[in-house]
Length: 438
Image (tube, rainbow, N blue to C red; front, side):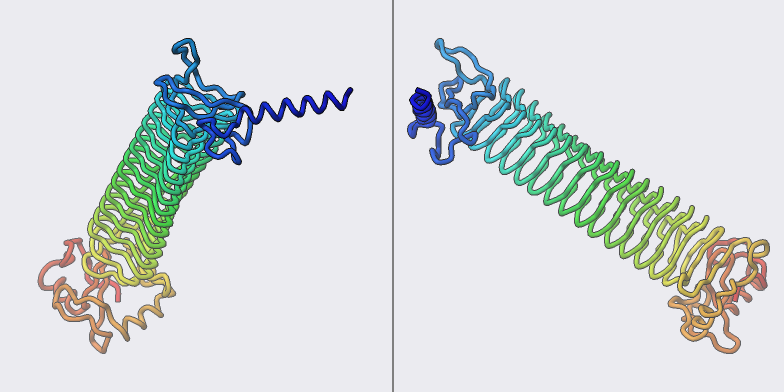
């Protein structure tokens, strides 16, 4: 008796499955691979009379009664499937071969189509669109008029909204938010509690994470990283292998690229360019049309602005201020203005102070190596008084480096201070003859 009952139950189950997945059921594209992994369900009809997709018995597609029969209120395309405990409602559209499963919900006027999957506890609503091979999962949310497509992924508790676009192989995960008109694309990643908003773009393997914000018209791309509490906004561009981290800000029309690092509470703004392996850190600011590149370092409370250039192995730190001119490989040339402390050659250890009488009336004890090099190699620039090349030092020809940071032939400067004025020929700073170095 028990054996007979088991046979009858098995036969009934077989007939039920066969009936559910008959070859001619309109929403069963491949009977060998039925939708929802073979879970019991039904092929549906949409409110407009179109043949609809498959809905698992445990899932819910909101229905309306038309001609005494239940029809889908949301539009479910012919080969789309709603599985598990998923919910699709309102005027949503799930079309083509899209799949909604797990505890996911799609509602409002949202659209999910192509080969897109929405699953886990994800939500897609408003006027959002998810399509292509995109995946929205975890507790991720896509709403507003946002679009997620290509091979993009939105996971964790990430949110994408506004008119944002997540495309190609981009990943938005953890507690990240992307909104406004932001665009994240080409394998870029936004994660942690990072925000990308307004018209910002993050692309080409770039990463924005931690508590970082990227906003305005900023562009982040290449292999660059924005992390910590960093802020990038305005029309700033961060590219190649650049790193913006800790509490640093980059804004205005600034450009940071190469292998450069911006850290601490540093600020980069205006039309400044940072490149090479440059490092801007602590409380330093670089702005105006300044250029920092090579292995240069700007740190402490230093300020580099105007048309100033710092490159080679130069370092600017402490309370130094440079607002024009250049520092090349540690040698100040042109119209460099220095206040407080400037280290101008890291390798040879020269330290120059303004306030010479109170702080340091001569070169530091480590200046001998650099002085020897100046005697043998000279400077790369012409003297601003005689316009002659500053050739290697010879008998009777020396250099004069002023308190205000300008380099001259010593003979030229002595004559100018004696015959013309006691002020610097370039910046008009008051000078005292005999207190110029070299």
